[in-house]
Amino acid sequence: MKYLLYGFLLLFLVCLMPEKGFAEETAKITNTLNVRSGPSLTSSVLQQVHSGETLPIIGNSGEWFEVRLDSEETGWIAGWLITTIENTETPSVVEPIVSDLQIRSGPSEANRVIGSTKPGETWQVSKTKGNWTAIHYHDRIGWVANWLVEEVKEASSTSEQQDTKPIKKEVVASVLNVREQPGVDSTILTQLPNGTVVSDLKQLGKWSLIQYNNGETGWVDRTYLTETNKHLSASYLTLLYHSTNFRDGPGLDYPVIAQGSKNDKYEIVGKEKEWYEVVLNDGRTAYVADWIVSTGSSLGLRANHTRGKTVILDAGHGGHDSGALGLFTYEKLLTLRTTKAIAEKLKDAGIRVILTRDLDRYVSLSERTNLSDRYQADAFVSVHYDSAVDPTANGMTTYYYHEDHKSLATSIHDEVTHANSLKDRGIRFGNYYVLRNNPSPSVLLELGYLSNPFEEQQINKQHYQANMTSNVANGIITYLNRSR
Image (cartoon, rainbow, N blue to C red):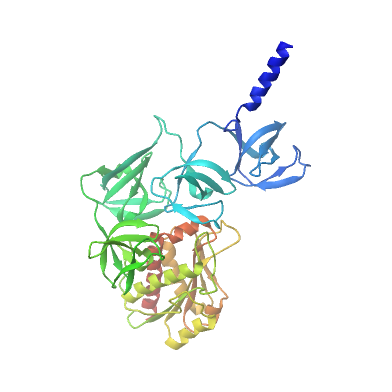
């Protein structure tokens, strides 16, 4: 009887013990697969799970594993379709693979943005759900897209990766390539000349993550860096428009505190997302949008003989017609930003530029093409960004309709794809109204896919917009020079 009482007491104490914080094993999902009500292919399907998700394993039957779902229900998945990993008390850590990665309040692009990344920042992972990862962001949970982060390997004495405080270093190569990721196969973002002073933020193997002019970041072979006592060179921007607004903070919601004139220069002291922080003439600091300024990283335009020529630039969509939608981008706003930048570069080359719209407003297709006839335009260029059901679709395409307009398409396309990392989808026939009904040589540009989350990040970057708009302008100039 005494032993029976001990047995009941032991059982009672076990029931009071808290559950373990981590399951012994986790199922890592590498492909879309079915979760079933039982350990058999004949069992009903409860739901589907997708690549990148992880589910705690709570049991097994033969080659089948019982897992716990987000709904706290349980289901069964085939063991031969998953990878199992042992859990430890140390949660994984991730870091972004792009700059200014947005952190959202929930696992969807529909959730509001609560912050963004900083260079070299890492986060502890809370859990994953579908294509989203929950991280410990300050004093709350934030969500980031799985495909825009990567796991940080555990540091050890033999680890190749180490984090350090920023160190001032000088470029000792004649020209040093700055890449998007560590590795010689990664996209080249820009090149830095000998003597450039940078901040070395982080090391991975022989690669360093650096911060260079205007707050941009990228990876370089640190063999070509040496520590220096030189000061970081001051960076400047130039205003592209008259009556440019300077704001009290990095966003359109902040009040305007000053205005500047076209070609005025200001020292850059920081950058937050798409906003530069600059020093005003009275010593105050203020913010200006990067899409209405140029910096030293912008490409120069080549010599030309195009004065007196007229080009119509058509920003696709507008007003109630938003065009394609990305995770955080409206096509109608991005096309307007792009065409305005191209326009300023063409004007600097002495070309008369007509915009079909300079505000977020709706313009009919006939109104757009009628401008070609009214101004006897030498070229008509319609700017768009693409979208597809398949989120992996990527690249840029140039369209023409009339055969004698193909030379304009070729001039622009060759320039844009020559110095761009995006996939070249070629020059194609396009049965579009603004091409079909246009008396002037006309093309329609699709400059990347907003439906591809990674490409959306790329085409919103300042260096992409700066380089691409210069390339489009150079392509137009090349055509006008040949056709004069």
